[in-house]
Image 1 (cartoon, rainbow, N blue to C red):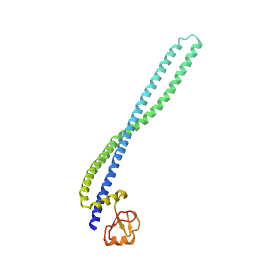
Image 2: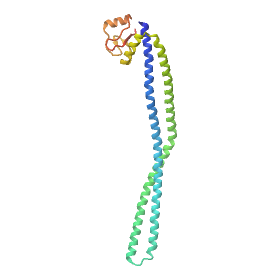
Image 3: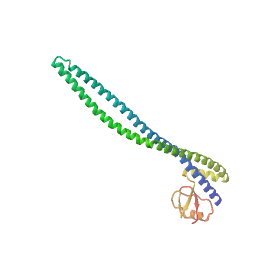
Image 4: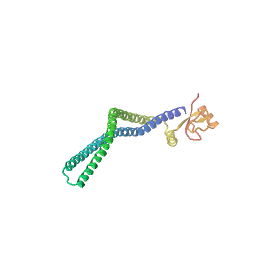
Length: 234
């Protein structure tokens, strides 16, 4: 009986490590994708700032050309004022000149606002530029570490599976079948008894079963959860 329970205990240890590795192997790809997304977001943020900056600089140049157009118009109006023959024509040209001058003032205000935005974006771009390479390197290193961990775990998993296949040859087929059935149903097939309580389901073991368990007379299972019981004297 002791031999059987020790074999099952070791098999459970192998299975628990296999389960832990398989669980971890499912987590790592998600962690890698999250790191890649964070890296992409960082690069995208820098590219967006750079694109916005170029757009505003182009808009500023357009506004400056608009001012030049109005200034040229004012110059022509000024030249026309010396040639008009009637008061109506003179007043009309003055109104057109005033409108052009008003438009220039409005555009100049717009340019000032654009220049302020450009200044803020340039500052943000410089700040991002200072950290982006360092952050990209950090993310690349973290991703490499995750990939290395995954490769190492895959190799270890193959070793454990091979070890398991070899180890189960030592276990009697009926006992192994029962172990597999319990493990599939409960997650684990063995549970340590703490005082008179099964640590698998945390219910009290009946006195008769507990007494037999302490004496080590036979391989016993919990009447509540069905797990094999392992008694460890304190």
